[in-house]
Image (tube, rainbow, N blue to C red; front, side, top):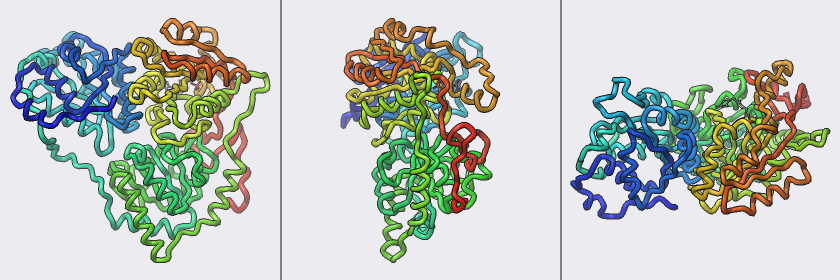
Length: 595
Ligand SMILES: Cc1ncc(C[n+]2csc(CCOP(=O)(O)OP(=O)(O)O)c2C)c(N)n1
Ligand SMILES: [Mg+2]
């Protein structure tokens, strides 16, 4: 399943070979090492599907909806670190990709989306199945192309993969006109990519690094605020070394879960709207925030003007546009997170050698108090119904830290982030920036394709599951044995939680009745999967173990859970992180000395 590197001498052999544009497209995908493509054919992209039929290198997974292809490409990319690829036809095929492209853009997922376009002479005529997908995706792609000359195909594909996978990763769209695929052309693979204006700065400025190190050893209440960029830069080993070297507390955002093992003694958990009291309050009371590949998202900062009022900010990111976007950085550092963190460690060592070592004793005694007093927890429903958090916690315990966990969006996503211990990078996949319901099943499918030997659990909501479960057919037929836990509270639970808290318990249109309709067990069976149901705590382990034992087909476990469970802690949207609540109407009891 590894992407194969092009054979040496290929370039020479390919020189001046005559073929169709479509053959050139498939040849180019092979040349960049693609082994898996998720897609659905249609009129405008049909020429590409013909040579694809013959490719011995590329496995095409025929999905049931293009959104599924897009999220599968994301899941593949997140699980492997390689560029994920999806393929669709013009018009509705292309527009069905839009959500997944936007998702990849928000979460910096390397992805190349290839779409067929109507013949170039018909572009702009409202031709059948014409949509200006380049225009539509302009604000949600890192870059995009419309190819009308077949001679441009190899260079465009080479550039698209280079752009998607380097610097701050992201989605690149390549829209290819049908006539360009049908025409004859000469295939020549470019030996280099020359992109004027695209030279991501990877090496950080040493003066800024020295300043950051100096601040780290002189501060009293520092926090390493670790974002998804640390995972994209594959900088987890460097992060761990920096944490060990400095003794500074670490928080990992929703996008960075697994970047530092949850069991690491300096790990305070996740910050943000549903973060731990220790993580949220550490940032809030810090005197130094070292942000690494994080973007001061509103879900982390709460009301921005009241966020971490006493903190000096070091902000490191490969994308200069992120720095000082939301919170002004006192020390801006542009660079690749791995290089930044390694250089920071070297600079801190130099400070140590000069006798300047950070003393965070007082800070740690404070942090440990918050951590001990306000651990994550949940109540067992008094009416004997199943606690959703318990189900998720047991899946994490039984499947263990080597498994991959892919969430949908909603309460179940937050609980999956809170109650599973992430010990390894790349084991937590979710839609953070866009918050796309329907992400889990197709992304789990893509992740399983990328990591065929891993156990892949989709932890999905009953609402999310109903948006993209058609890909279970794909999984069953293609032999992709994902496991799906539907955390079925029969409602759009996260929205219902807001109605409980902020709309006087007026439950307008959040009741899905999905413990009655549809029957998820029968649905799973109809799709060629194993369907199981579990409604009591006593049966949870057996249901999970049964699912774990089935590896020849997908499994869906419908966990009927208590619908009134809520996600805590919570910082209500738009309020200050100081307003964090640990249960309804209940704030932590701050010591006087905390204030
Ligand atoms: C495509 C999409 N539509 C709407 C929303 C708004 N939304 C956020 S969470 C949520 C409820 C999700 O319900 P479910 O999948 O059952 O998860 P639960 O919160 O119940 O665990 C909704 C509707 C969204 N995030 N994405
Ligand atoms: Mg639900």
